[in-house]
Length: 223
Ligand SMILES: [Zn+2]
Image 1: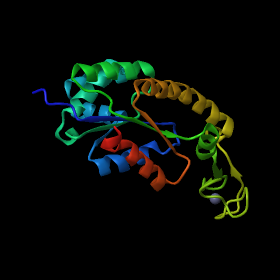
Image 2: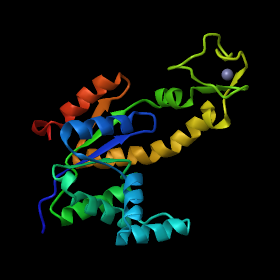
Image 3: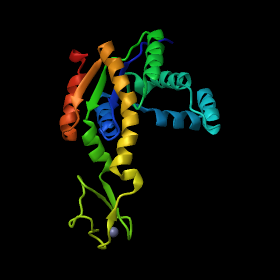
């Protein structure tokens, strides 16, 4: 059976942009299967599909699963009943090489990426979101500069101990890690912009407003 491929939506956004949250909301509202590649690997390995066995071999050897194998898994996922209306990809492609392989694989099946909504958040905001975590020395009680500040700056509300930032949560570490990821993301964004399917939305606002813009970007009349 070569049934026609449903809609393929590639949701793009940096870590901290709210992509996972929006992916869940959008897939529910639009009846698209939410496909995060990590889940895809886990399901294929669990079900011991031939691709799952292949992928597990790479993972067991500590190697990256080749893009071609990941793409085959995606195509298998596309053929499942719950993906009849289409899929929403979350976390793939991560780089332009993967984007090109995906494009070609879909074209072979008579499909294409319909739309690539991009949740755009400036780097400084991402660093603030990802890097504002503090914990207390006594018990590790968590705080966040923006979303959950302590009553007295630098002091735990619960036990009065000093708050500190783990190396992983310090702005310099967060920024360095983010820079690497943003470099690849920018190229993927350019790739889809060139293809004419990119729809950027302003991700600095509340979840509901961002969802509204994403739904508008995904409306069929717009696609
Ligand atoms: Zn504490």
